[in-house]
Amino acid sequence: MSDYNNNDEVYSVRVPAGKRTYFFDVKETRGKDLYLTITESKRRGEGEGFSKHKIFLYREDFEKFEEGFVEAVDKIAELMDSGNYRDPIAEREATVGSQEEPAPEGEAPANGDVSFDDL
Image (tube, rainbow, N blue to C red; front, side, top):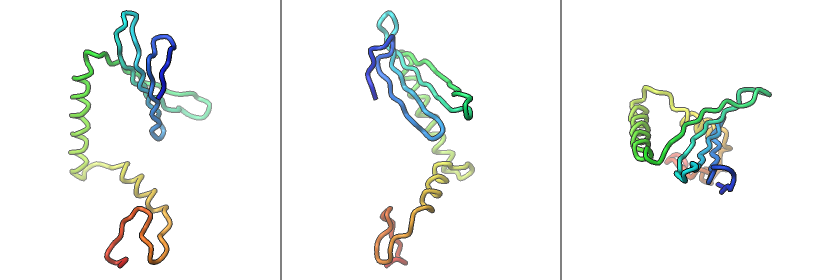
């Protein structure tokens, strides 16, 4: 997180997320109104630069945007519970979990999970 005195940018947060990076930039207009830009940046390929997608969100729309965002995220959670959709987060966690070394005999695994068979 950082503060800027550069042009119209007031504040910026960089969020690395796997193959993508998101930027949340608070900016100001000449009239001193604040707005938010959300940028998704993704590397195209070796030496090909980045593809960027940007949305501008104005203060008067924050509440409606948040309501729609929360509704959509809740719907995704509901649909995921149905078991009809792929869960990349669980797949990634399973891959990471399978790469962990087993705990030495008599010790609990690093993640703290203990089964009755371990007792």
